[in-house]
Length: 78
Image (cartoon, one colour):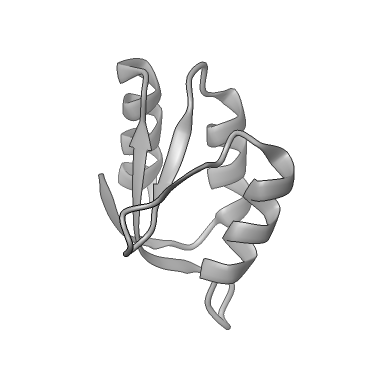
């Protein structure tokens, strides 16, 4: 799913950590990075975070349908 803007990156991390399956960040090159790996998660999220602390225009893929719903709920909550 493509996400236009996330203002609360801390909440995003909480949701990803609560997911049962893998949550992957899809890069423009098509490469997928598993955001469930904590070291990778921190470094990648810092790279995609803007100067205002938000994240814009990313694509996430959750392997578990229930995890996808958690991410959708996060987006809907703003």
